[in-house]
Length: 186
Image 1: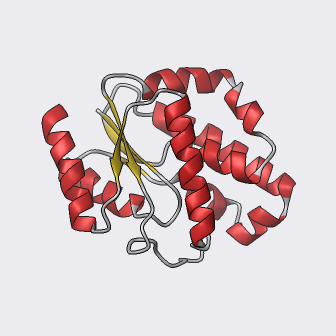
Image 2: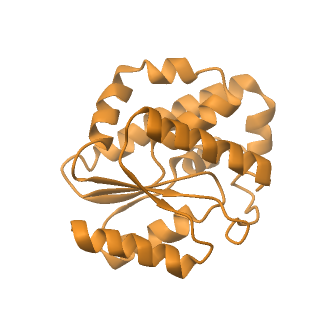
């Protein structure tokens, strides 16, 4: 079983992903974007203010996400994000979206997202759950969060991906929804 939590920044994906990883004793693939930013010693103000840095950064995140997931090719895992999220950020902040969409790795990845053993939870923004900045993640500006959320929704629909939407304001309710779905499919 491959479990993805998809959604904009600061909506609570990491909190739910960590909980589910621990509860079901599945490896967690942490948010690759944070890892890449940390390795490059970049903050999101630097990334967003330079198109060349942003292009390179999103391209690296794209390929690193695929690379990390390949380590678990025949195993179950929980992922804090997917390539769909990366595409949304690329669409919003770069000029490399077309490159990513035409990358042969993406076509294979997309087929894996459509597999029967894959579940995508689309975590929607809520003013009650949006978190403050931690110095690594992007500043939680509501309009930016909503824009990314909309792009993710477009890509989920455009690629005909099966997903479960999580819209509750309550973290407890969000976890109950995920647990209910997983109890049926696992």
